[in-house]
Length: 481
Figure 1 (cartoon, rainbow, N blue to C red):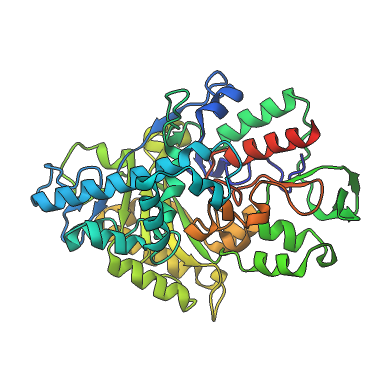
Figure 2: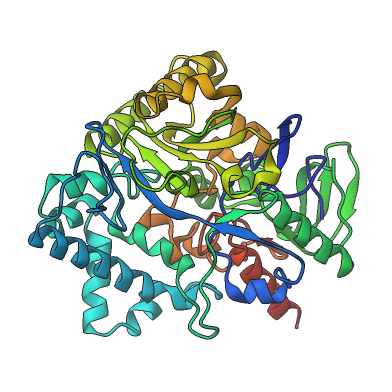
């Protein structure tokens, strides 16, 4: 196993950015790890632990709040809007639709995706109706159909906003990676890993070494070597060549095919379509050490509740539209969706007594700016984000001891992610299942014999689920049998 950096883990890493303060600097939350993968790698026995996250809270500009799990939460000093019977029925119908859609796809998690034709053959009439709506209806149009009030539509507005302004409803099916496994009865856990995401990577590295894998860090691959449409090895940036009849790439599809393979070894049509894969919708992360818990103006419930999950700001349709207007114009987002998380509240080992670590996810953001580079505007953008959070939590700015903003350019440079796209390619409906990343690449094999793909750009998608790697490994075993 060849790793470019001096430590393993890719996007699942823990780094001590300031003495005594540790952060999951890219992915900060575990979800979607299938129970079979837990069993295969003995993750529980190896000591993997996590803190479950509470449902997300959504502060409003009038200092009320909502939670999609409980839109009429009674603990609100301003008596947040109570849902009418129609609103309750609409919310229930919307959740039922999403659940049914996810369940159409969850049986395919641990296998290569079926073709569209084979998938359709297994649908009954009701399932077919749900699927057809998912591939023909945008999420906001679906919400318009089922949710009767603007209040509800704004509450759900950030759903899919990390993907596009208004993606097709098929995007919702990606969340099937979190569904219960019917065979074991267990659901993938969702929470902050104790010790940060790097704790998971360290367990997997230990398991790999015990199985005989040699891990070489500070070893960057320059080219995949190909002879007569078969891989024969790799060439490192220092000129060293390593022979191998099998290469497994955990890089995103664009990095793999456009950076590591000479153009003459690829069909020009394939090259053209890989270039068109959607990666330009990116995100940012603000990481901060704070010495006070945020005092959310909207909250009057149990003191610990907001800090046990995410607090998400700027979630109205107006804000999402504004952020995408900025993205399409190549401008830094002025009012992006901001998701504030405090991993150390659930895991005090990440920081020192009297402090908290804040991990703040911001989306969407353009991969590239039109007239400047991200390096030129980083501090201005960070100050704007801090101002917006402080509007809802007045003590936030004064509580900051240290902070760093990771822009799309930083995510690209540090994590080797094209355009800083943390999912390798976006999870819009057109790039899922039989089309992830393209039909001829969807089963983890490439047109070049011996080259396999195991990263987040493969089915079923990104996050730190381990499923693409699991599935790729089993396809390789089939080919070797």
